[in-house]
Length: 353
Image 1 (spheres, one colour):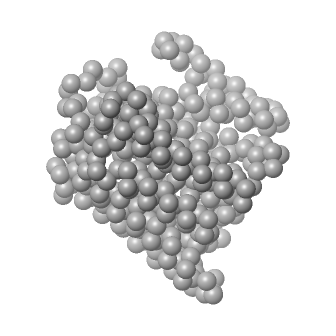
Image 2 (tube, rainbow, N blue to C red):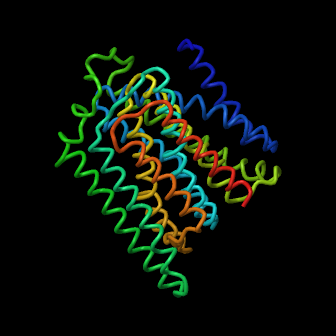
């Protein structure tokens, strides 16, 4: 699509979405217009991410995209926490984790594999990511098993301690991967071509970061507008709260990662695509979820970190197959299909329970 047409449609869909949100009470129209506008802003976010990755490298570029993409999900979750919809929050956290590990990674691997027979990235990084996924599963599994029968204050105390441990673990991982072991986990050993072999981006570094920030802000705004209408639309269709949170809201919240990761994989930048998908899941599990525990304390209504058996099982299954497929540091289109098939299986089960 030509740039002038893209900009025109971006502005037009945003204006229509704002008008629908503020001046109409037609929630299906609000939902549809927010979805359409969100797709254009997600496309801009993907383009900005590609440009930033050119200047900062595959790993940091992927980390930036995961962080900016998760900003929308964090904002959505804060609104849900404020409303006391803790089950919906936990379901959306679950959906974000499995959505990134299965749907985003699966579509990226599949799309990239159709164009390139084998795509390679850093196997050492893949191994560390797998270990961190297991940490996330353990952190959710242990409270669900051991905290039943405790008082509310005891559960809240344990939840806060676990949240602190996960946040510390996440920041130590960033320090480990971006500082002390940067060379071992960096771009030069991920099997990808050097960045200077790619065409020059359309924007400078400063402009790229500016567009990345602007796109993130509007993705967050449109996501909040969409959530405002999605509950009534979904409930009118008879969908469960678990399915709404774990799949519908999660897919919408992950729209930015979807477009950016797939776009990168199709350019044979599978390293940054994996960093976006897996890195986003890790950030949700090890940072966003713990932060929401502290946010709930600020609202005076503590949220615990006990997830349901369905949610823990889904996260464990997604982590297991994503780790199995990515550990060797190479991917092909069929592995992408496997990830998407598991996502469909989980989606079907969540729809009927």
